[in-house]
Structure formats: structure tokens, C-alpha cells
Length: 512
Image (tube, rainbow, N blue to C red; front, side):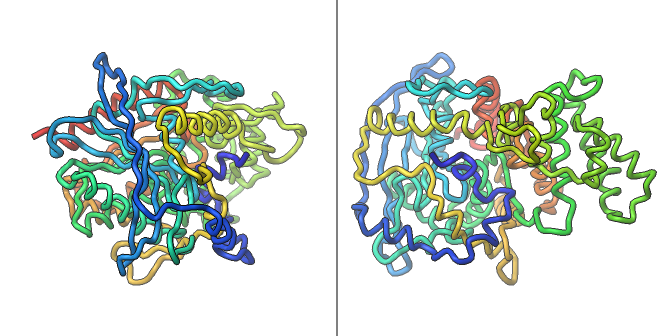
């Protein structure tokens, strides 16, 4: 089974896709597969009726599993885009928000958000322990967002049941700007097909889906479709953070290291309150730690000793280990070193999870326990859900991920206001442009304390550097939860997140 490392975040904070696979032939595998797959060249829709109980009220809804045809500039069909929509019947469009949700990768379907977060049904997992094998259990979701908004889960082209059509190939969709164009056309098609132009509209992206959202909202608004809100879950807005020769990544990881050490009881005299503790770590990271790293090899030995002692106190590592690493602690090494004395590793997507390697003396973990612990449950449950509940027939294989997408991704991006394409994805500027041109656009950043894939401190940095006018800064909110990259795996966190989102929707889309 392909691992969640690829499924959710093949590129996030991992520079390899930009340089590796130089000899790979783009689209060869995709084109070969497409020749044998009967991709429908017409729009499909299978509708089933259901109900769910949310906040003490029974809500009747329609589940629609289907495809949208997006067209090129010559009006020729270019792709069949699979989606699942949950809509509540009755009322005028202007009184009913609609939210478009997706995961990232690049190369991931929307299955993870679909099966774990806000749909009216979700798969039950044993987080932060590994979920046992089948049979898995689908349960009604009392924390669904269906009481606040209709939900449309969209699969990127090449994932799920979404496929290129006609003469189109993967390269027409597998890139930062190509992906934005495809999603913009799919959303416009859904809105037109379902008479939702006058509905309040929201985007909800996770992981690379936040990269997509930041630029997509600007693109759609340039095309005349205004949005009420954007929810960024576990964000990556600047892929340049891993460029060699810079120390921002080490600074950005430190609060996440500290949160993980706190969770696993590796902090001496552990503070009772995590939030206050992390405020101290943030201050150290942006102050003495950043100043020390900025001096590079010219850092005085006495200052190195002082910084190493504080780093050790915040991370649970030894002073000697920190000094041997030149004050720069690599993520893989931290995941291996923190619980080495217990012969355990910690997860990457969710550092609450613990793994067991064959060799406790190694430098980095053999696998990510937060990946292997839940992947089987999500993949199996979704396939069963497609058949038994959504009743959606297809001769295609449903792809939770498609690895060729990450390998062949075009990272160049024509950012808002840029004279020429950037060599990699930086999209905070696009989001800032969207907020300036639509002063009512609200942005909510939701973050897991134990997320190593997209550390919250880096997100804070990126959103604080959008150069927003003071009148717009209040439109950006931050929320934090005791969970990892997939915040919803912690059901207590999911419940709190739903309550917070309900308030966000009420403020961003007040009923007329």
C-alpha cells in the first residue's frame, strides 16, 4: 500500500520532488494507463438520500457522487473531475453556503478529509494508536459541517476517479498553476451546474491543499467569483523554506519539537500549560536562537553553549547532541532521538504516534507510525463507502494517490504581482492580493501542535509577512489543537474544531 507520506504531502517541506526523477518521462505511465481506462466523456451523477443528527437536530441531505467536465480554451473536454457533494434541500441559494474541500500531495485525492473530517459519515480510528485491521467502522458524524454549509469534496486530476480527457495528458494539470486552473474551472462548472453563483462560498484545503487555496481564491476572484472565507488546515505557503544555506526551517521547527517533547514527558520540570510554554519557545526561537544561527560559523563558543543548553531544555535532547548537530536539528534525527532510550520513534504527520524500528541505533526512523497507523482504515472504508452508501459505479480504479503526479510536478508559479514565474511555490502573496481586492474575505488558519509536516510556527511567519494593511489584519485568525497534521484524528480536537468553524461561518457568511 502506498504510504500516507505520498498520499497527503509528497512535496510539502520535502525538496526532493524539485530535483529528483530528472530522467523520468512525464506522463508516460499516465498516458499508458489512460489508453486502457474507460474514462466517461460526459458528466455523471448518482444521488442518494440520507439523514444525520447534528447538535440535537436531524438533517436530511442528498449525497451526489459524480463527475464534472472541464474544458480548454477551445471548449474541448479536457478532464473528467470526480466529486462528492452533500447538500441540504430547501431554501434559497443565498442563504446556504457551499464549501469546496480537497487534500493536497501533490497527488492526493480528497479521501482523507472526506473520510475523517466533516462529511456526515466518518471512519472510526484509534488515534494516536494504530487502528486494527478490518472490519472498520463508519459512524454518523455529529461534528459534520452540514448544519452550516453544503460540502463538495473534489479530487485533483489524476487522483480518485478524476482523469484527463481527449488529447490532454498529466502535464496539463500537474503543476502549481496548471492545478489552480483545473480547480478553478471545476468549481465554476459545479457552481453553474447547480445554480450556486449567489451562495456564500468557502475553500477548505489541507496540506498542499492550502497552497492551492491561497492561489485559487485569488484566481477565482479575478474571474469574478468572490469568496467569503478560506480555511487553511496544516499549511504550506512557501516551498522556498528549504532552500540550502538558510536557517529558517530549523527556527520554524523548534516550537513543534518542544510541543512533542512536552507531550512525551521529555521536558524537565514540565510546565502544566502547553500554550504558555510554547509562547516562551516562540520568543526564544525568533530571538536568541535566530540571532545565534544568523552568525553561522562565527558564533562565539560561550554563546553556542548557552543556546545549546536552552535548546536541550526545550527539545528534550542532550546538550551534547544539540552541539554535535551545530544547533541545527534535522527533523528525521529528532524523530529518532527523542525516544531512543525507549527504542521508539515519533511520527511525522502526528508526533503523538510512536513507532518501533528494527535498529534502535539508526539515525532516522524506518517509517512514519502516524502514516501506517491509519492508512488502511481510510482506504478500505472509502472503497466500501463508495459501493455500499454512495452507490457510485465506475470501471476505473479509485486512486487515493497517484505517485507520478508528485514526481512530475511543475513547481513554477506566476504569483500575484510577479514579473516572471517563481521557481517554486510561494502563495502567501496571492492570498494577500485576494484579501486586498476583497476586503471582506476572512481567512482561518487551523494548526495541530504535533504536526511535523507543516509546522505551525512557519505558517505564522508566512501569514505575518503578507504586508496587509492594518484594516485587513483582523481578517486572519489562528487556531491550535492538540493533534497532528490531520487534526480530525483526535476526536476531541475535531469536536472543538467544528465548534470553532461554526462561529467562523456565522461571522463570514451572516444570513440575510
